[in-house]
Picture 1: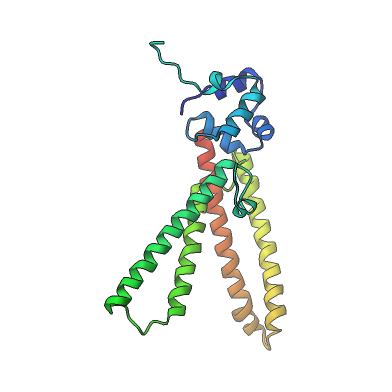
Picture 2 (picture 1 turned 90 degrees about the vertical axis):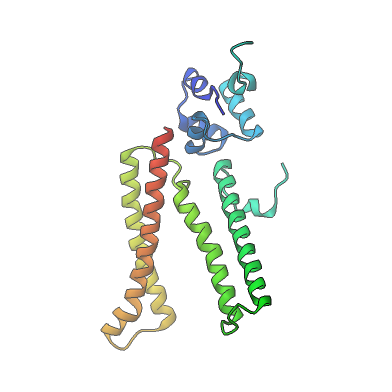
Length: 67
Length: 157
C-alpha cells in the first residue's frame, strides 16, 4: 500500500527509531510500512497519524489523478 | 481488539506478531495434513504397522516445532533494530560471547545432572562434545537469523 508516512516523518524531523518508539513497534515495522511492504492495522495507522500530526487521509488515502 | 491467551506469549510488535501467527497456522495445517495422510494409509493398510505410534507422534511434533523455528529464522524478523554494519558486527560479537557463556553453563548443567565421569576422555566425549554440538547449532541458527534480519532491514531502510 502506497503511503506518505516517510514524508510526514521527515517533515516532523523524526527518525524511524523515534517514530517506532512512540507508536510501540519495531523500527523494522516502520521501514516496512514506509516502503509499502506491510499494511498496518487501523490502530497502528491512527497512532502513526496522531504522532505525526496528520490525518489518516493525509497519510494513507490514495488520490486518483483524475480527482 | 479481541485477543486470545496466545497473545500473551507473542511479541508486542504487530508485524512480528502477525508473522509468528502465520507460521503457527501454516505448521498446524501441515501437521493436520500429515495426520490425515497417515490415517488414510493406516485404513488402507499401506502404513507400516511396525512403526510405533509414539515414534510417529514424536516425529510429527518435531516437524511442527522445526517448521515454525526455521520459518522464524529465515523470515528475518528476529533482529528488528539491526540496520547498520556497525550494529551488525556488534550483535555478531555479542552472539559469540552469549553462546560461549551458554556452552559453559550447558557443560556445568550436564555435569550436574549426569555426574562427573571417571576419565577426562569420557568427560570430553560424553559431555563436552554434545554440549559443543548443541551450542554450535544454536550459534549458527542465530547467525543466520541475524544475517537475514540485517539484509531485510537494509532493503527497507
